[in-house]
Image 1 (cartoon, helix red, strand yellow):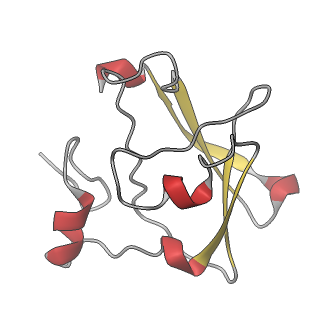
Image 2 (cartoon, rainbow, N blue to C red):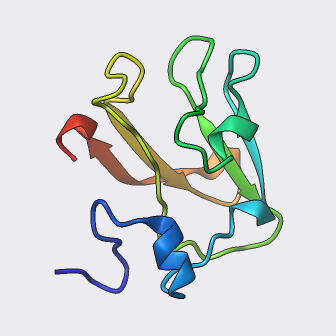
Length: 117
């Protein structure tokens, strides 16, 4: 059902952290956004409140950049997207890219059809 490198769909990241299955390391990174409306930025994106959110304010693509200060291995990335609550602003595709800087990013995963997850 699950593999060591995959979190099952619908798994609660907070519960996985409590059981020691995962460790949240986002606080060790510098977060930036391609754009945001006032009051809908990084703080709302990261506040663990499902009622708050990031809202972009610019042309596409809309980007979330996560930069770690030193080389860091990330095995699991959890993103909460609620298509049923707001289909007009929920992304239809998420691209995960990694690299040593913005100029050498390589796409390692594309998630399409967010509504189907």
